[in-house]
Length: 172
Image 1 (tube, one colour):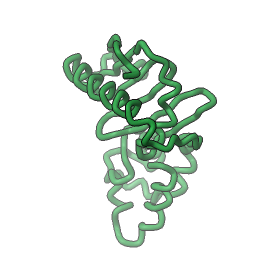
Image 2 (tube, one colour):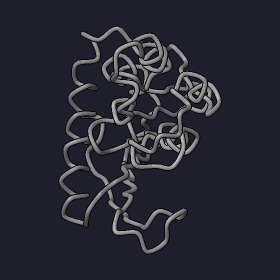
Image 3 (cartoon, helix red, strand yellow):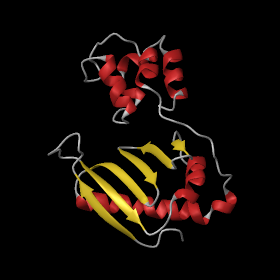
Image 4 (cartoon, one colour):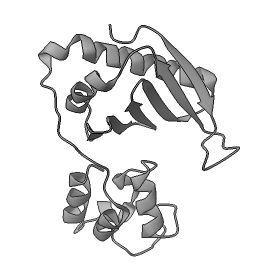
């Protein structure tokens, strides 16, 4: 077992004070650096920088970030939700650590795509069907992991397959 104990801290996102959505910082009793290549191998579309070391990925409604001895989790409703979600990710990390001999570690560096790289592949119609006023705003939400490419109705229309594929190749 890699992580035996942890402390949970919660805070409102600094960019959105008073938000009904919370962020949790889970401070662990373990150095998470050694597990990151295994997490990178197991998690789809993770952004991993072994030089820092940091790994960030999105699953469902949550964005996870591993750094040193901290796991950050966003988009939490309350403390009970944070405790359940933290417990699940700690269990998953311990499971990955226990199976590390079966997993080929992936040391591939992947960094999040830049806003303009994303915008290049969006329809750029500023139709608002996604719920935001412009494709630039939508691209910004994609960068932050607040949206997924499927939230753009125009990308799901016939003739947009190549653009959608390019965005998926960027890890979105």
